Length: 343
Ligand code: SF4
Image (cartoon, rainbow, N blue to C red):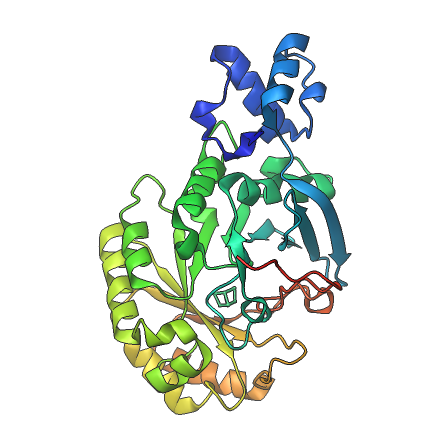
């Protein structure tokens, strides 16, 4: 049986106003069964139910953080598991979605990387996270207006499915999100960044997890750094900006004694010269067995001061959901027996 959410909204299996009704039920009302679509004739609903499934998840569990963030643990129809995080702020509601079960990138400081790779998510399994989180929080799906592809997985390694999901998120008859509020975060894959720049109908934002300005440090913490040099990544970022005209965000997880030296702040500022960019300094979120610790507030401030003093647009991101294991780099299915099955 096919997952309806995997389809592009223009290819939903009804026509004319019936198709609009179906899209409205799924993406505006957020109903989870065909039976609840009361303005569709009974035989149409029965036919849809015989051919399609609406819900990509077998089970959904939540862990609520004291700061209001909620980690959603999804069990997919094949029994594999992955997570999304809901982060309510005063002025916006943000969701961080996964694009894979586990992740092959294996960044040394990331709990998801330590899990290994399970499989790619389908477009419907990605979009389904938004619908499920909205339902879980008592919101209409369109109330979730900010989305980051920053959960489990490297989105540019699940390129087609992530792009299809983005098209569904932005489609005016589906979730109708603004492209300015959708961000794709990558570990830095030059080929994928160039491909993304060429998706001119999309226009979503790009964030690059750089985490170090020098090759030796970067290769130590990001294994893909052995294949993609910082020079190649920066060249791709500059090309992306030249093609799209958009600012590029750089994520920088602050690891004590590893990438937080002031000479590294100087080198980072040098790397960013001439690029319209923003740097997010992220205190490292600890997890059992990571082998790293976060830089202290003072160390982060000193790093920040060097960057700001060199004219870099920089901020410190306060992580949400730490106590729920839902912060950046912590997503790793904290439940017994919850590791992903091998690919
Ligand atoms: S930081 Fe992102 S790319 Fe790196 S292992 Fe974790 S999920 Fe994968």
